[in-house]
Image 1: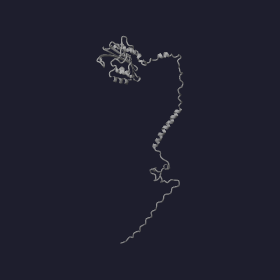
Image 2: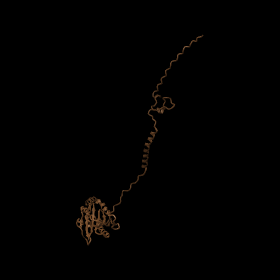
Image 3: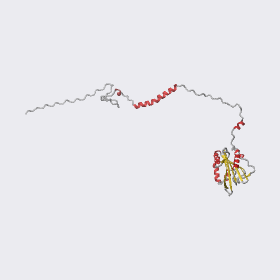
Image 4: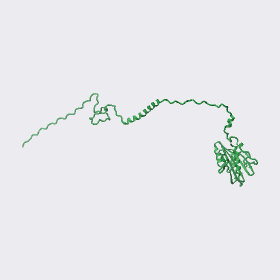
Length: 287
């Protein structure tokens, strides 16, 4: 049996250490130091960077920044263009400052004629007693149920006492702006007449309107041309402090803050035509 002699093992070659990288040339940045935040192009060697991207301080301009810049620059360019167009236009001439020469009448003003041409002042400015009609002939004075003489001024208290519920009427007159009341009273047989000119303060002229409007169902005094109406009732009434009955007639009209009121108390029905004629006669003293 033959014995084969084994071959001695061949020793492995010692490992060669890797060669150190070559030092970078002076003034040239190492290729391995890429610009932070800038990725290398696909296919480039590791650590390689495009020349444009490798320059320090160079950044890419995004689409959003371009849009913002265009938005800011557009109005500025438009304003500059508009100013240039406006500056190239010729100036608009201003209107003339000349005015017409004042004209004065040659004739001297007649003061009396001018005063006569002015509208007649309201008849309620003076003494109301002077605006009352005169007592008709064939009549006698009447003291208005004991509230005074046949003519003169009626106070707010006397006016309130002439109605039933004097305390209520007094408060109502104060609230309505009652100022004064000039009256004239007379009687003819058993029929009694009372003519009043009731004036309210300047701020309460609507009270005179309300007094005229209280007469419902009346007839116009003169086809509607006079601001008033009249009514002769066919109903009997009873005096507040007795059982005596009477018929009632009433006519009202208004001029400004003065109300004209004519009342008739009669044992028989009041003549409407006579009442209307009396009211028209008193109205003519107010216009």
